Amino acid sequence: MSDTLHTLAPAKVNLFLHVGPLKPNGRHDLDSLVVFAGPEAADRLTAQRSDILTLSVTGPGAAEAGAGADNLVLKAARALRAEAGITQGAALHLEKRLPVAAGIGGGSADAAAALRLLTRLWDVNLAHARAVAPSLGGDVPVALLGQPALMRGEGERVEPVTLPAPIPAVLFNPGIACPTGPVFAAFDAAGGGRDFAELGPLPGFADLDALFGWLAAQRNDLEVPALALVPKIGPATPLRSPRLTRMSGSGATFLALYATLAAAQESADMLSAQHPEWWVRATLLGGADLS
Image 1 (cartoon, rainbow, N blue to C red):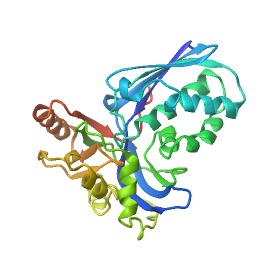
Image 2: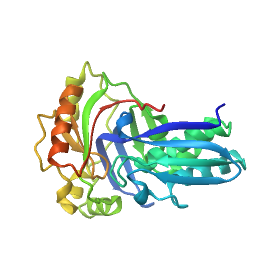
Image 3: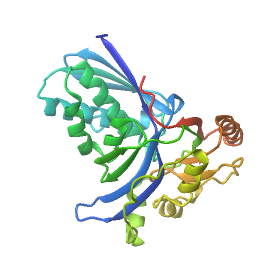
Image 4: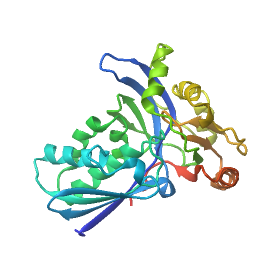
């Protein structure tokens, strides 16, 4: 095995997100179709052998992510060590490219990447990583899988699904804070989740047109409360003929779906020219490239 291991931690995207009412434990049941972005919308994590456990962070989001004890990468490493009963360390380096607190599971993706790398570095069974993933956050189990999936329960129930093709998309984030806690609080205050019920099995889709049509009948239950709290996160600039536009997670990242990657790239280029300060990426949504 090489002394240095690396993997990508791609953005998680909720193609729909149905949210249940607040539960006594303070959490919510979810029903969501989750996909992952390509390497142009991903963090990168590196691990090397070490006697102690350390983390360094660079990249555009380094200051916000931080390298302290509350970083999910370190939490994942400590949880895996405890679960597997080992004492080895690791020198971890995170290149933070994704926006922080953006509804695309950046921290969860980083935690899942740490679990993947450290099972290899420490030669422990991936079952240990699966065991600790739910305790690290609702998006971590699906990020550990890294494939299109229905995510249910509090995120611990993950069912892989097959989509007709990778989905051309634009992801864009205006760089405005949209904290998850207040969005859920607003959802709860409005009585959200009263009509929640899990969808049945995912239908079979002959092509992307069929998928787009089905997705149009779904929703993100957190989009309305997020826009009420932070109206400026919405797509104020008209996009060029997307098939569907929707917020991901609790915001502030939105996705616009297209029939072709060329159309998505054209729209991304226009959006970047109009808003050079925004985070904008054209990508294909599907299974994660973890290389």
